[in-house]
Image 1 (spheres, rainbow, N blue to C red):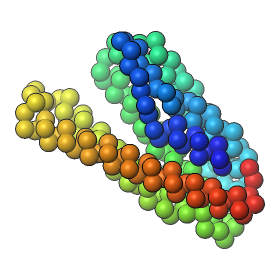
Image 2 (cartoon, rainbow, N blue to C red):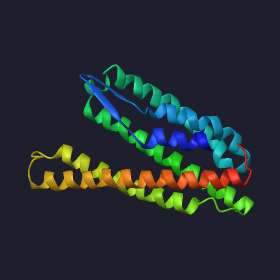
Image 3 (cartoon, helix red, strand yellow):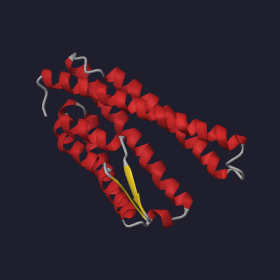
Image 4 (cartoon, helix red, strand yellow):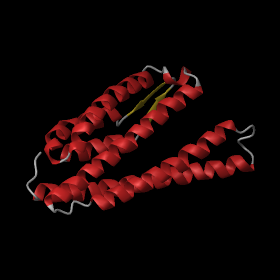
Length: 193
C-alpha cells in the first residue's frame, strides 16, 4: 500500500510551473496513478472494488498523461474555456471516484478480516474534500460568468473559492496522514501486497 500512499501524494497535491504558454506540474497525476497501479491488482483478492479500480486507474493514467502533455506543449491555454473546464471536471470527478472506491475497498478488507484500517476516517476526509471541491468549483464557474467579477459579488465568490481551496488542502493533508496510519495497520496485519 506504500505505492498507493505515494500515488495519492502526486494525485492530491499540485505544484505547477508556468513558463510563458507552457505550464507543467512538478507532481504529475499520471505518475501517481501509475504508482497506484503497482499495487491495485495484487489487492484484488481482498475486494472486487480493487479489481474494478485497477481498470479505471489505467484509463486515468492515460488520460492524465495526455492532459499533462497538452499542458507541457502549451496547447491547453489556447483551447476554448468551456473545453478546459470540461477537462478539469472530468479529472475532478474521476479523482473523487477513485478515492471513494479505494476507501470503500479498504472498508471491505476491514469487514472481511475483522480489522480496523481507519476506512471511516478516510471516507470522512473524502466527504470533506468533495465539499471543498464543490465550494471551489461552483463559485469559480459563477465568477467566470459575472459581467463585473471585481464587484461585490465577485469578491464574495472569490472568497468562497479561496476557502474551498484552503479547506481542500487541509483535508488532503489529513487524508494523507490517515492513509499512512491505515497503511501501517495494513502492513502489521500481514496483508499483501
